[in-house]
Structures are given as C-alpha cells and as structure tokens.
Amino acid sequence: MKSQVVAVPAQTDQHRWHQVWLRVFAVTAFIWTSGFTFVPDIDHTNHKDMPTYNNSKLNSAKVTPTDMIPRPELSSSLMKQVNTVHFAVVIQRQNRLYAGVEPQNQKLRQAALDGAKDWLVRQVPRQVHVYVSADPTLLNHFHRFAADRATHLDVGSDIILADIERVFPAANK
Image (cartoon, rainbow, N blue to C red):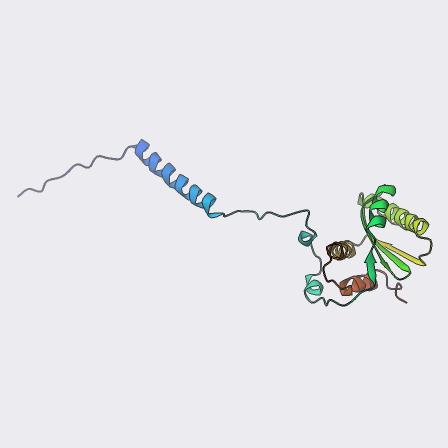
C-alpha cells in the first residue's frame, strides 16, 4: 500500500501579514482597554505632587499646634512687586517673617533675596526680624504648609521649624 501525500496549500505572504496585523491589533486593543499607561498623569496644580527633598522628615512629622501663620497676601504682593522673584511663600511667627523665594534665574539669586527682604521690611515695619532664603527644600515645605493651612487641614510646624533652624541658625535665639 502506497502512502498518499496530501498537498497542503502553502500560506501566502499576504495571509501571514494579515495574521501578524491581527495579533498586533489584538494586543494594542487589550492594552488600550485595560487602562494601562506608560507614564502616570501628574496634577501639577496639586502641591502634594511637588518634589520632596527629605521624605523621612515628612513621613515622621507630628501634628502639633503652631503659632505660624501663612501670609498669602504678602506672598502674592511680593511676587508682583519684586520682579526678580518668580515665586514666594511668606510665613509669620510672632514678630518674625520668614520668606522662601524662587528667583527668576540663578544669576539673579542674590538680587531676589535682597529685593524680597527690603520689600518685606518696608511693608511690615513692626516685624523685628525678616528672614529670606532661596533654599528649595525650605520653599517646598513652606508652600506645602501654607497650602494645607489654606485648605483647613490639621498641620503642624515641626518640619518648618527644622528647616528654619537649618537655614537660619540664629533665627530662634
């Protein structure tokens, strides 16, 4: 008995490409409908998404009552009146003003610090001490503190006080 050879028609190149494209489409459709994203969306308007430079302090922060008060009216006026200041947050504690500023560029850093301090002294002459810094961590924590207070969250000033002691060692003496 002779074995019969059955001829199987060879797949054409066109048929193979249809299968490849069908598989590519199926995988793409699955990824698209599953909600998978390659890059997470970041809400740049939310202060919680700002970079934090010392997470360990933030994670172990205690919420204690504070006498520090954000001064948003001074912050916004400072940004408008001193043209070398790009962003500023002003916080008051008793007879002291603390300001974190971000200069327009690093070449204008000292001009921004001097201009901000002079402007704050003229605006609030009853304040005995005015401290201004361009430290990014201090500015970040000031901003977060002011934003949390503005939304009536229960926040303490432990991190802010640690930053003030680090940046302005003679401020609380």
